[in-house]
Length: 359
Image (cartoon, rainbow, N blue to C red; front, side, top):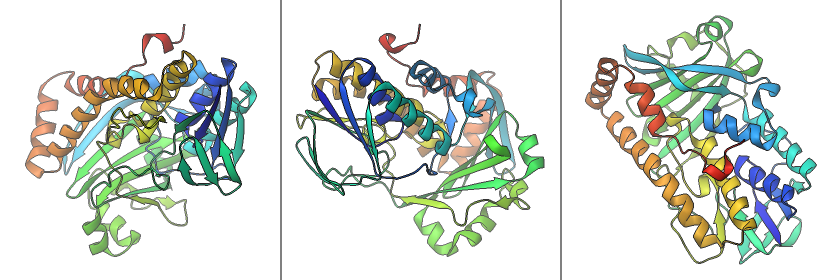
């Protein structure tokens, strides 16, 4: 059996590792030639940490920062609580590079700098020529392969910028802060190297009205939860950006033979912090089911059954927070009920199936 894996992020690399260790051929194509930054909140939930450790990629050895607390802000209102699981924060540049190295060491073939131009069955036309596999695993993340597009998302833009602000980094030690505002939300948390990751989703109309990133940032700094970034040093020449991410997308069971992993299968709103866990577990589940002889349709149905509830619950929460009254009501309710924020965090987790829980 041979598997052709499109995408070298967490989902594709996890599948490659487990397949290679089970004695199967796995060829992974990654379009970027070198480690790079990605638009991602970089929050590793307890499930994501457990999956990485089981794969042989312990985040703590890569300098991951412990996260044990979450804050939700809406204007001056805010509520905080401890997380119901041990979490970490680690840049995707470091994590993706490490997991691809483990995939290669496990015996998977990894080809970097190879872009996929089109797919036909299990044949990929790439920048390096035609590549074939018996099974095709589509793990291209938030970026679609031509001819395999998901329904477009709303007119929203995702942005990411790293900052250096030593005092704020110390203040936020162990904390992920989520700030809801008119037109979107932002997540702010420490990552390795003394940096802060600001990742946000904003309405396209609001960004266009602002005109550019400096003007939009000036608007964001008027939010009390983000005001402390005013004197922070920006560490990227410009923010990373992506548009029309289809949050809420759930790939349905189909008979086209494609194994859809990670964001190609389920796109959960980023403020829930479960996107990387879904990616990892989808990759590991695909590898396990493929090795057991299941077909893509059976896998897609199994993954859909596991992701539907948390994604739909997260989307309902997102819709509620889009309205100012909804945001205030949500924070007031969470503040009034002890443990409610922790319960909400747990409710949006996609736990690994028993067969994939590390011993």
